[in-house]
Image (cartoon, rainbow, N blue to C red; front, side, top):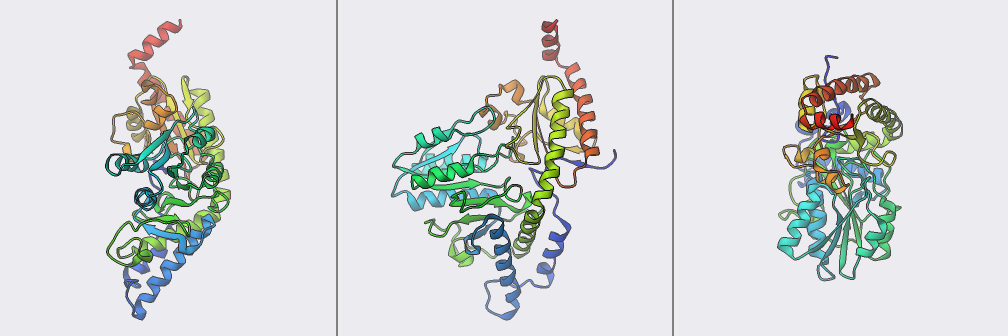
Length: 394
């Protein structure tokens, strides 16, 4: 197979043609600054409002509750830092989990070290689920915020968000969820799930890079994040990225309209990929829950193998995959997510994440598994650990 096989859609996706087409006029034709008062800027203002509506519809929110940012990491930072400042008179306690994206974990570390926050990092089980009982026990009178991701970016596990939201509401605690991987992939309704704040990023759903949003429920007290202008209802200053906003709106609507059919096909291919690997490659294991996981996510660990070596050899066949989060792909440390679910270092280092798209085919999946089997055999043939292990089995 000569063409590129892209299985790293959790890192970023290809911008859809209709998204690009929708964006183009706002570079050269309707390029007015939405903050100006003359008629020419009207198209830009209208485009922003339309995108707000398109995005709000996906999560059952009001358009006034959508605030545009530069991406998921900014949205996470805004939710945690600004909420902490706004509610610190009530308390300083935040609850999160050990498998959050680093945009959450590093922000929590900052708040602990620099702002006096007290943070509880919940454990997860072997499939990556938090314990609802542990969550409820962790809540104190000083708890002001719970931040638990909707679905994990590495192992694909979908957390019990509805139940988390119920617990948060019963205790009068704000609930934020990092939904960067879940938005447009699985159904979300912020009212039914009692979500107060939600982060997302355009480039995960065939939209452009450099654009995201933070949903903030009306009535939530939160500080402005960027000061300087009156944009985003005075909460996030800076000239709006009109082309990016337009593209994000179209991508969100597109994701909503195709979700049911797309998810069903991705699940079919995902389970075929998982099934072949677990059946045909000895000493392999699936990471994350087998059922309650993102439709397009496959994360496996292959013993006696270094993940980076697998990626380099897959790349020779034109296969793009990853060993974990794109934000930590240059790190030699094992994934904090895989360590949190109980994998030892030597197994965590041999992890492989493959994330599908609507363009992925069964032929591609079978090609990848066939090549992966060859690669694993070759790498294990050079592994002293594997040799010693096999000797002990005799």
